[in-house]
Image 1 (tube, protein in one colour):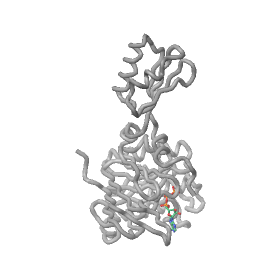
Image 2 (image 1 turned 60 degrees about the vertical axis):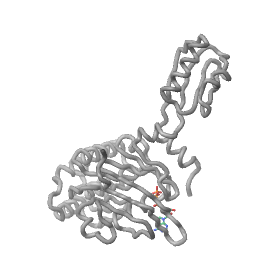
Image 3 (image 1 turned 180 degrees about the vertical axis):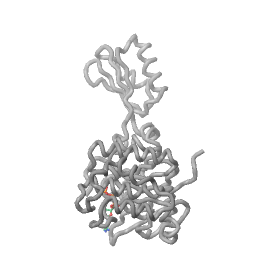
Amino acid sequence: MRSEPVVQVQALVKRYGAKTAVDGLDLVARQGVTAVLGPNGAGKTTTVETCEGYRRPDSGTVRVLGLDPVRQTAALRPRIGVMLQSGGVYAGARAEEMLRHVAKLHARPLDVDALIERLGLGSCGRTTYRRLSGGQQQRLALAMAVVGRPELVFLDEPTAGLDPQARHATWDLVRDLRTDGVSVVLTTHYMDEAEQLADDVAIIDAGRVVAQGSPEELCRGGAENTLRFSGRPGLDVASLLKALPSDASAAEVTPGSYRVTGKVDPQLLATVTSWCAQHGVLPDRISVERHTLEDVFLELTGKELRS
Ligand SMILES: Nc1ncnc2c1ncn2[C@@H]1O[C@H](COP(=O)(O)OP(=O)(O)OP(=O)(O)O)[C@@H](O)[C@H]1O
């Protein structure tokens, strides 16, 4: 049984003038890590900012930790941590001062020195925010989002533009938050980040959630997979095709190399090997290629660039 939702969004609509940024979006995030993926302009940031109480829905309902983020902001704010894509930080303040200040606003903050060490901010504690590098600003924003030991953290593209070390430090921090029972909702363009961190992934396109589930479920689900085998050239592909379910296809891609596409499940594998047995074929290689999250993402959201 999974836990109660920490975020529940129903039929959310948000417009900016004539532009409908979020168009009847339903999203549930439960305890653990939820990654929100989507092409540029899909409505991820708008959705997250609405959950944080920074934007007022045009219609629909949003509940975060059971509270309405607009009407019950005062009750919600101390319980959530927010890392914005940019801004929200006073540019003239020194990094460490700012983090200590935010920590003091909370009853049970994390150890600031440990957090600074953890995120590699030790060398720039006395630097003002505006003089930090992009990656340092980002790490500071992450530290500020988590220092208050919130129940739920929203991270908008937390590792965009970070170097690999900082990316891994961020991932480790997210994993530790999860272990400590903190729920995390993050947006990302990095499929490996979602695969590495998320219990649940929601794919948003044109202001709606087009798929949601664990990375395994999404990769296993509707997406087609591929089974390949090699045998002697010129096998009777038409006969193989007859043995397969009607939605599968089979082809000899290069002489002696065969590809079966469709819903590749244990039954389909059994059908192919049994067909091989009946035709005296001993494949010297047989493999199942699972689709990656990126394949599923591109299948659902298309390959053309978004404006
Ligand atoms: N303040 C605003 N005023 C007008 N239009 C906006 C505003 N903020 C966002 N939009 C538009 O709303 C749509 C959704 O934007 P949003 O930032 O939510 O998408 P996103 O999925 O977070 O994109 P990205 O991956 O590029 O960050 C886009 O078409 C964007 O141009």
